[in-house]
Figure: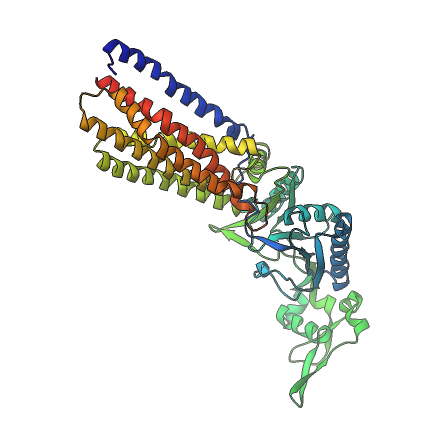
Length: 522
């Protein structure tokens, strides 16, 4: 085939259309993720799914055991109602523990407390059960109804603890301002559809009495510790003896009878023994008793008192990123205006998500530079490595498009799928460029357009078979709906969509770019 200069120039001008079309295609197929038609859900709760659904119930500290028991039974009845609604197939049994928590995730909480309870729903194996644990959890929450009177409820469907996707750390020097800002943010989160398990760290502890000694008490030589010790001995009891009976030791405690210990009137009429002197003084004379409730824990970050506000997002309604975007644009500016000096930072899963993206943003350029150096040394060219990786953005577009068409969220596994496709793109490009170099070395009179066309023709089968075999090998996972493997489906979707676009990029875009660069030299 003889290619004249005028013919090559026409072919060169015509070949410019393909890169322009490629860029337009790249921008168009990335639009779904910008327009939120493909939702970005970095941490998917489908990973590490368990064979049960558990609810950890937190009532206000000091709640009676009977109230906690009644609340737990309400959760149990709701689980049975869901099972009956679904024909009795999803739930195998329901267990309940009151006064403690089954979940090891509550390691930072107080165990053996009357305000704690756990209800675990044990699920049947598939295919007896057709719904996922997330779907059953959603139906269970709907059946339970209003739980705003509870301190906190945590639903778990995974074998590992998942952090809340919507979490903020509020910092301020004034505890009163911090408490009010926390209440405002929490009420704002309630108005966002799809958010549940909304809680904060401003929970109050048990009721207690603070003792302030009056001038008369100070004159009598009394201190708050001395008054508190006498009151504790009278109402809680004072140990006077221990009796050994076999292997057991019995404590003998002296205290008021039960009817006196349950009355605040008895406390008000209590008398306090004067230290080192005979006689007693009325409690109301020597001390002022005030009932208070303080925070169960005080959190400080960077030396500032901090309040944590957490919420989970129902992925069927809203993603954590969408919820955080709504909070960032609608709520946070108003809070910062109303409370000067307030600082609001993202926390928990959002912070981990940011750390992951920052790590990828740092490592991916380093990896690309390393790939460039290796390819440049292998091909002995500075511009050919750029062409070799030109198909990676197009593979990313294919991954986004495949998520859009199949209706899957773009997760962290999707990102890893794009990374996997990138290796195949570079491999196919090296195969084609190596053949192109050999053709030019064997016949340096060959024009670039002819050499690129011949290299594509010679390596067409190898590139196509590599992509087809990979696609066929991964395609069965595309239909996987098991609880253990469903989190891998976004990875497969990225691989399949990316491979289709990457193959087109290798066979069409790469030869065109070679002809454009080499054609200018000729």
